[in-house]
Image (cartoon, rainbow, N blue to C red; front, top):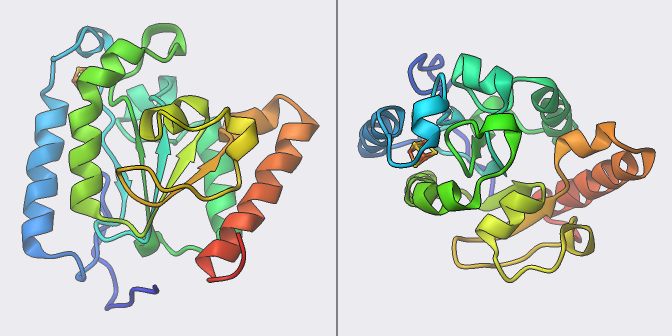
Length: 211
Ligand code: SF4
């Protein structure tokens, strides 16, 4: 399952990608074109209220893609996913998994920040083709959903998040491993313990063990 290769390229400032020579030139070109399409998108009302569309950060040939719900204020300001408080928790979790920068990527279901940070299901349906095209181009071994809305967007038939977090699933877009949202760890000790427990189950799965 491990993908190896020479030293990765430096990050692309326009797309947030760190890339890897293992990603084909065609993938790079198509991802760049898709990213520009998203940045220019005004298909739903969120396009009028965002500061920046938030496309992706990470490798262009990731083993794992983490999928969150929607950009927050810091993400809207910078144009990069999970760079605020939730992002710091996610990055600590990724470090706990032992993933290198060339092994993962991070994106959201919604590419533009919803006002008041309330997940917009109608906008998510409009935005979904971008998510599908990103996943198809990145072709990860595993998708990790972060939070209830990301899970529901990727796996509409899934039971409630607390029933399935930490347990692998296989919906149409590819192998899925749901986690609670990183921000949930700030709300209660119980959810923080659940986050850490499920991360360890994910680590077992990445290493080819149980989970
Ligand atoms: S949320 Fe998605 S569909 Fe709506 S404007 Fe942004 S990129 Fe386009």
